[in-house]
Amino acid sequence: MILIESLLDRTSARPLITFYDDATGERVELSGVSTANWAAKTANLLRDECDVEPGTTVAVMLPAHWQTLAVLLGAWWCGAEVVSGPADLVLCDADRLDLALAAAPANGVVALSLDAFGTGLPGLPAGVLDYATEVRLHGDEFLPWAPVPDSAPALDGEPAAGVLADARIRAERLGLSGTDRVLSTLDWSTPDGLGDGLLAVLAAGASLVQCRNADPAALDRRAAAERTTTRLG
Image 1: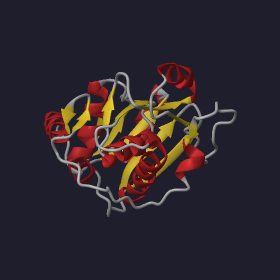
Image 2: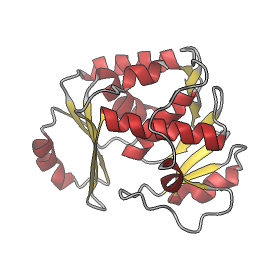
Image 3: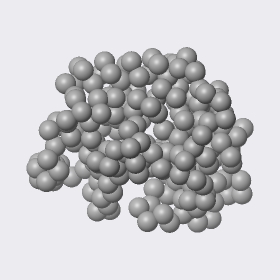
Image 4: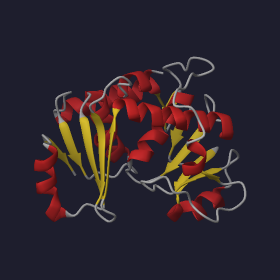
């Protein structure tokens, strides 16, 4: 699919995303290869356990996080359309589980603990899949059953080709290139946050340093330590 081929270098060993959570002290770094493995595992989970196929709508109720990147790429790899409204399948964190269950999506709910060590969520209601437990059971290579056309809806009705074109325009506007390392505190829950803070960075071939619960006093030190060239947010 055009979004996977264009946004994700599956052979690159250089950092693609470096994730910080200042509330927990977490730091996780994934290369293009590692990110592709997580995206493939997620795609296999979504297809095999949740019946996600081209045309399935998926709501991603998650913060800006490295696992959210795997979820987005995995959904698009299956040919799903990521939507901000009602959806066939919902992926959410613990804080939004009640909201996801209230929507009663036809294909169910997948809950993410977002734990750096892969610990799952205890006490989930019957029928809710625990991402941390299930994803590790799936292969780190994904082969779609059929090619996904570039005209297929990918993000709130926008076709995959259009999402990529918009990401490239945003990257040019932001002055991003493949040599950049971008420090960002942007949230991905809005179209502009997702477009500028993630998709534009990937479309440019840049490396992302994503900070959640960012401590403003630490950002200058982090920018220097991570040798970032651009800051967003």
